[in-house]
Image (tube, rainbow over all chains, first blue to last red; front, side, top):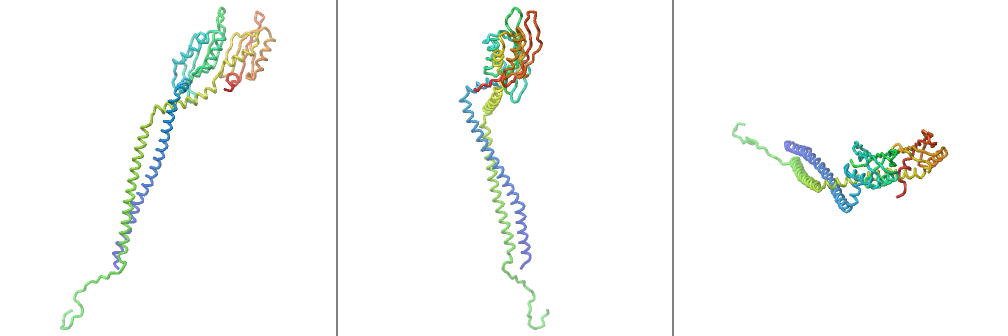
Length: 174
Length: 188
């Protein structure tokens, strides 16, 4: 028996083992990582597809109920909508029989949770019944207005009208 | 060896005779087989990896296409609506109804009591009245009427003065329960 052949065989087997260690194992590890990456991407794709489908369905529902959504947007607009607020206040005071003497909506808006407050200050003149009507209308107004304080005082002696100072808040989304 | 006229029995040169024994090459065969096996496995794995990489590329393309399908405006509208719905519920629950409070004060006020001024605040839960009445009996009756209402927590009487007309001027400070006095608790 030629011992050189044994050495050569041993060297070849060793080379095969080194090759297995140097190529097969890293390749196997890479494949494991790729499989993980594929599973992650598939999960991501499935969840995103589902989300997009839900958004699509919601959008169909949104379009169907656009009238209701417009009303909800009026209750709590996503902007300050100052012009609409002034118009609403003027309309309510006129309908209640009160004279709008002064208005201020210039206070700094403060933020509470996910919405902003828009401070409103009104000076009105009229009767007690007018005030009650004004409050009822403000309470039923589509855009939510909360009156936080009311001050009422009689006007000048020859005048039977009362002067009202009303403070409140309207709201809009952040 | 010199030839001395005799017979030469041993050859002058020797030839090496190889004797093949069975199994002497097995280590070589085993080594080659192992090398071939490793090469085949490596090639198979490379081929499989290439397939996986293609799958990843396809999935990435699909994700990009999916991203392109998104309508950001629609999403923004839906998010706004979601916010509006949650905040609106909260605001409606906390909505203040002063008309209800005034109606209650009106019903509890004695006919002989005339308001000069009043001031009300929702945050501190107070209703302050400056009024004129005929006498202390009516004033006492008035205080008792306010106290009898369960939405009124406390009453302070201040600055009672007898006017030159003989009537009484007074200030009443009412501390009320916000949940009952200025909230609409009626079932919808």
